[in-house]
View 1: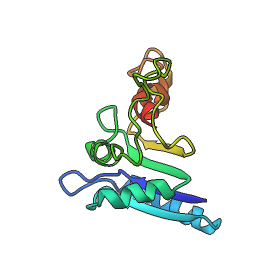
View 2: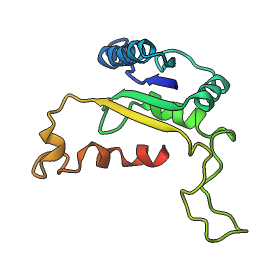
View 3: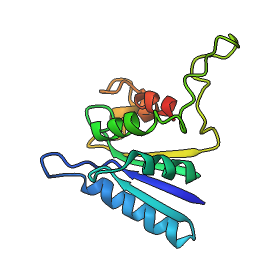
View 4: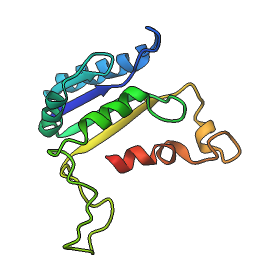
Length: 152
């Protein structure tokens, strides 16, 4: 299989991102050891949108390795989504069309044969996400990342 790992362990003020980088490197080594093709994009480095579009089109699975920043992904990953995912080769609009009013919002897009993994690291214990009386009110990581999941 072809994997694209997007390392969003972004540095801030020249520091940080080391845990996500280590996790991305471990995934890359493990997948290659099992005979898969792996390409990595490190969001700490400049990227070319057309190259990223090609990587996504060629990948069977996208792995996003990211820390949780301010209850979401780092702005660098959001910028990557804004830059890359709007490509006409990847995004077919939101699905609605005047010629077929039965098509609903969110039914567009061309990458329906792709799979993705969202791997996140947090400076918070599991119960902060699962206990309804703690900070995330029991919503869990999938509830917190619902917009990301819908984008995928």
